[in-house]
Image 1: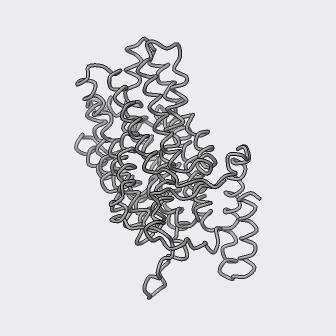
Image 2: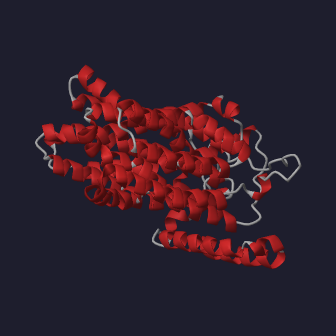
Image 3: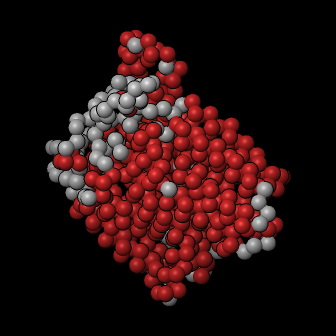
Length: 472
């Protein structure tokens, strides 16, 4: 029986017994729609890939005193949360993150500042988002995601308007430093934290997968729209239109759809009930080797991915490729992310989160090795496939591995701490790769260094997350 069918039957039973659940019948329709979409995606996966279940990794906090996982009463509103976040993540990424590169050239032409000066504002925002990820995660663990993500959408809307009104470099930097707070409050990490508490482990990967697959089309949807608006309205008026879209779509969904899982909600006028979800605190997680291995590995992986995104065009241009062809390669790397994410859940079910995560870093290492050997190879197609697929799985692997290893109870805090390095690498990578190239003398040396570090990361993850055994 598919997950969608099981969900529909469960919703019918609960609605028949519970007046409160019957009141959520409208939300149940959204739940069934999302469940149906996920079942349709997974029907193309061979059954053999999902036939085996694996036990928790040796690093699992089950060994340090987790209580057993309580089964959620219903999944209907959990899937409604997933449906809402599919929409808001797509819009938020498409406008806040992917809007900047589209507006870059017209901003450069009108404001009169260099590209490095303008992109520095974007990097500053990414750095702030990385730094505040930990307190954002702690807030969500304690208070839920609705208030924070709603406030983040309001802030992002206001700042997009102020971005359109920026006339000086100081104003642009001020907007994007504050935008870092908005990004930390509305992009993937808070969305994942809003989801994990609604689902037991067997459904959690698919819930996260649904959001990432839909949001993976953010650049495909919004960059052409933004490019279409530019010659018709100019970059300032285009941003005002996009701010309106951001407000109309994301604010009401975050305010009306998001809520805490029922077993964590605080009764009105009473103390918070004891939480029976499994999990360990950030402090306990930070005392394990697996926490630091994951943090370091995802730092290396994100540094590599974002270095390639920024530097592959000048590198390939130096090797005789046209800028248009090099840019097309980046586009195809992005296209490879979607099929990779579809196959993530069954592969993780078969080989475990540790095995999949280690494989992601090893495949990235192979991609970097091929990129370093570009002058001696007839094609870069394998590199495009490997880099795109591994990048597509990496964010999903980080979210699901943290939830599987440390549990959902303090997921926001732990994910925020791991994301501090991973998202910090995103901000530091463009400058860091340039410094490495100057120090090592060539891009090839930089790519070989990255490949070596990724092999070390893959090995460390494989050893630290070694499964105890698999059921036969």
